[in-house]
Image 1 (cartoon, helix red, strand yellow):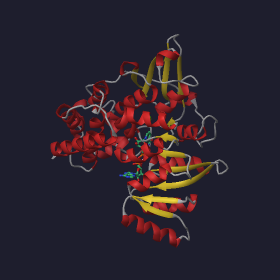
Image 2 (cartoon, protein in one colour):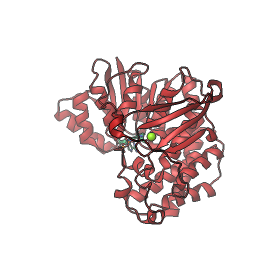
Image 3 (cartoon, helix red, strand yellow):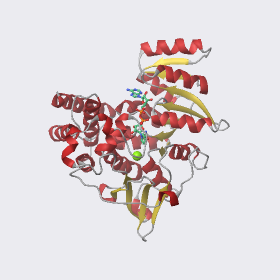
Image 4 (tube, helix red, strand yellow):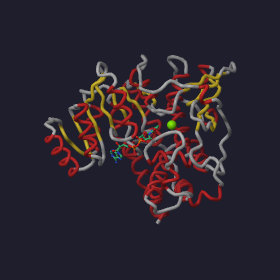
Length: 389
Ligand code: NAD
Ligand code: MG
């Protein structure tokens, strides 16, 4: 029996995770569920899954949750805030942590799970993009097991040799081919991108996801973050990670070997597949996802990304090459600009302009420790805010 903490249980990944968990009551028990503001949804999840612990974002939300749980006759420990998230992610009562909070808010609890040697199922790519080497060091020092949930990285993981050692050359790997749908603006006239609305940007052609990652898919910053994520997970340098646009989102990524073999993982675009893979690894369990009907899909297309259309992808490659805290600056500026765009306070193209400005103006320091990283993150956010206003 695996005991699971789900960080971000009310989000898109959290809900898909609970869907898979519910199909296998003989294998999984929920230890803790966390949400930021959606107290009613969290209370309903508590009724269905009976965790020992439930955590929300504020004291006020915790009070409301306690009342709702009491009304349902549930005895569950309720807490709030970052320290409580870290405690739930590292508690002796849990062995697996689904890291599915969005953005830098997930860094501390995801890091706590890694330091505590848990089986970490990583959806929260921003945490790894920010902390890079520090996170990977925490994983290896504690003996944690790190399994990727991001569909591309999960696909790559499935295409890598057994006991892969984060060194492509040692395993005859030539390149990692990261597929990208291209998002909703792949074929839209570039000049019109200035005026796209949040509703247009979050309308992803293939995936249903949270709002922030949906905007990241429209700018292709999502793929940029994933290039950095692939670098850390698989030990591949930037020039060995190639982005290939594949609008159908059927091939989730590929690994190209020196003998000419290219291994791919395919499936319907449904996050329950990588979630089930990581939950059960190295076994396989049913996920609820329909089997792939290639004849019905008929055709698979590929093209190269255009950096003029998608400047955020280029900025992410630049940040990876710059190293140190540059990816953390990129991530922080992106989070601030995307939120401003979603709030209707700025235009779509201001996202890439804000990131460029922050990357140009702030020094790219060495990555010394988490405290220094958080300070850099704060400076990048402040500069991005002032630029946007
Ligand atoms: P979402 O917005 O649907 O859900 C986010 C979750 O995080 C919610 O439960 C919310 O309560 C919680 N949260 C938000 N702000 C918080 C804060 N400040 N403190 C604590 N909790 C907070 O997002 P999502 O689409 O589920 O994405 C979650 C993560 O998974 C992101 O890092 C995203 O990049 C990654 N991811 C998502 C998908 C997908 O298909 N949705 C695919 C790959 C990777
Ligand atoms: Mg992805």
